[in-house]
Length: 499
Image (tube, rainbow, N blue to C red; front, top):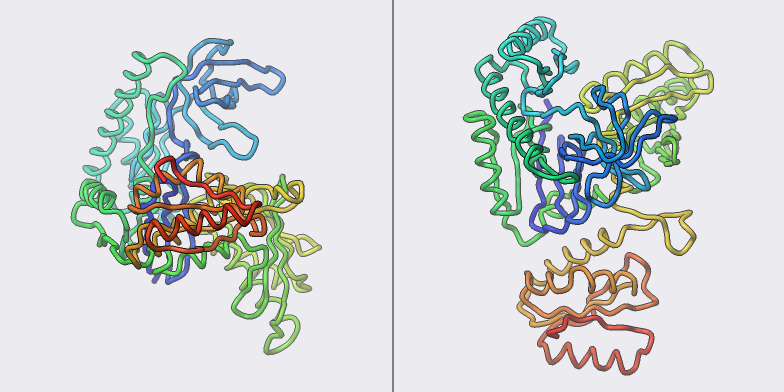
């Protein structure tokens, strides 16, 4: 039986993170930054900027500085022309140099069903495999549709075993929400946001909360109260235990998540047997190479290769989920001579992707031992969220984004602040990181931690390296800053106006 925990690190508004742990291992991570908020699910009253018949699409202005992409097939037959207004919903958030993708076919997800205004579909999640239950839920979906006129209903996986009254109640709530969205569209001028989906923690609970979740742990008292209220409305007496974490050690460090999250960026992934994976990203696809490494097996070459490939299949499913990798994935498994072994591998791949929320299609093993997988791209992958092109090598490599390094530093400063009552502290970091923190966060951090913070840009520091130089009384730290500015000409020290 799978033991799942949901751990939410919400105490820092600059970067909120929610992790899902299964049997003690990190399997999913959701990250949302103050400046790069996930837009999927948001509804806008947009203005058409241009129509491009050659690619059968239009660009629409959402009012946030970057035009979104709308396929004409997703425009409900509307006659799109420049400057007309249209209500659209974000189905794919902007990533890299691409704008968001939107649709005029609005859908509003609840816990148990998806309400599709002006739709005609009646569906049941493919992840519900019991035929009798599928038949029951399909009949309920048809009955729910018959209650109204001109909308679609799709039953979600969480509805398995749920009775009609609960589904009807949620449908009515979603219908009320749609009426509110339509009203906002009528009274507001384009381009503008007219509906924002629930926050990060609410989205994760709505979409990921299953019966095997034993505990939800949150480090923010305000969010803890919201989650309790949310679960009472959502699950009533069937809600899992919710714990408010108040320890001095940051919550992700306490549960070992910070360490696991760092490995989610590694190119090489070691398996328990001693074999390993190499994961490489290209613009068009992700390539994974399977190697026996230190694993020599117990019997013969055939079984060594098969065992390595089966173990790799398990870890590949976890890595794709953990790293939020979507699109085309090509896996170079170790060559297998026997067709029977290739079929065992395909069967294992089908099994390990069965519980994946994001639909994956697995294609056969080629003569070269390659397996192609396509996986739905539902959100930006972890690497694109946390890293950027390296500024030192022309973008051929990658480094952590400035925000990612800044949040590492803030969590370190929180540990320091909780361990003593010093008035001030001086930190050293790479000059670009120091400047970024000074211009973006320094005043906020001083207010939050209740002490003066000086940050020095040290040219000899690597991009992600930082060090606490000195802490203590304000006079002590200011004397150290004066000495540094006087004798170390290459170092610039940043401070707030009041420092």
